[in-house]
Image (cartoon, rainbow, N blue to C red):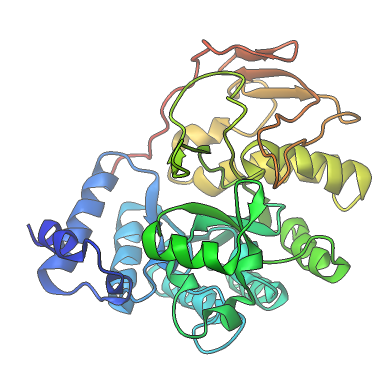
Length: 369
């Protein structure tokens, strides 16, 4: 009841992102999270960056709950800013401290966009934590743009443009960059609209080097952070596409990472620029994610390995032709160069053709206490 009443009162208010849950409300939140863990959830997702005013004690309680159940937390950290206080360095240090104090496995989501241009400092924190045996893991996607809601907390406040080093030009909706008028309109009237936010310029060699540092670091696994597809309706409103057509309708759009992440790694970082070996790239995309989960998700002990006795989840691709085709202007372009995909030993892609009726996947659950 406390949670329901709170969210009813929060409807239409923006300041809930800065409010601290205390008393009965915090107890109710923790109870609901614990219920999910008891039902086999893989861990606790903490979208801290979208409500950065949450309490330090609440985050600590969640970490203790994760440790109690032998699960992990997966956190979009509290701040993304290279200006202090309330910067990326502080946010990642908070997460590492909770891991050290509780023993909970703390996973940092997309350290590239969470760190902006301060990646060397934040990766140094991760290296120091891992060297001391603190259970912290990280991932990144190979794009210098994020995908988020236009009304996110990080884009509010008097100095958000300075903190995020951004103007309306950094925001993209569909194929077009936004104007200041567009940004003001959507933030005021449709704050839940998903946009692409360019936090670095990949055409700038210095910015590209920052992005590459996050992707190629040995401790960083590759994640797509894939997002759903959207379209403009007849009134110009942005709606989520919920259909099952294949190929996708021509008018839908998304972030290029939704269809290009892993092919981009194999094309750009392996074949074209030689920043990663093929073996290391595959390790980052398959074995490392499985190893991150396997201590508390037994099913993952048979994933990410190509050997006898493991699950037959296999991707067959041509290293000379695999490539991402999706762009920021048109993400609706499937990658090329994949010949076969097997899931649990059954074809999902056969001879380059997606089998739309294939359904061999099975649920993954955490080990129950």
